[in-house]
Image (cartoon, rainbow, N blue to C red; front, side):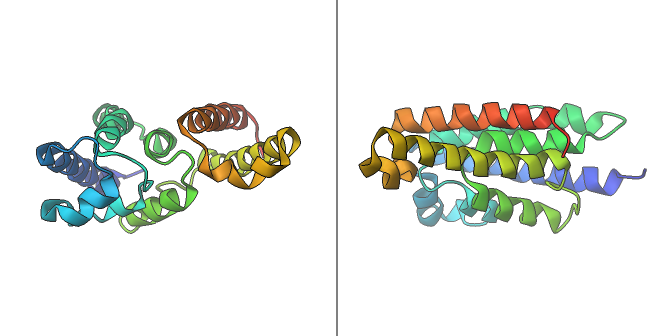
Length: 179
């Protein structure tokens, strides 16, 4: 399979992410929300993919999570066989856990140039895992305290960590199952 043009587009995207990380770091406001920073710093407005990130993500979190998401991309893009699932899932797991709408917008942004990005079965399973996770959390909240059931989406930091752990566990389980 000749995928050199896909590799080129993904390298261009990687460069775009690295430039966005540089601009975020240069703004020197690690605690600022990335959404707010994108609106206020002109050099960040060119990076449309930033709009899909969670509105609660700080600049420091973006740099940390983007580093985690893209650190293996150069090696992956040089492999003889392109591991499409790894490329997409590393970004989804680092930057879009708990943010399925942001992921869909981001994947569509990349799919404009790389049609297959984010369409692997594992990505579809992650959507199922996210839905299952949300349903499980809603059920648990309604059993433990019916008054808190409506506040599941507004959990504090500890709740978000638990939610991320559950989503990760469910995603790992679903990766091993065939639908």
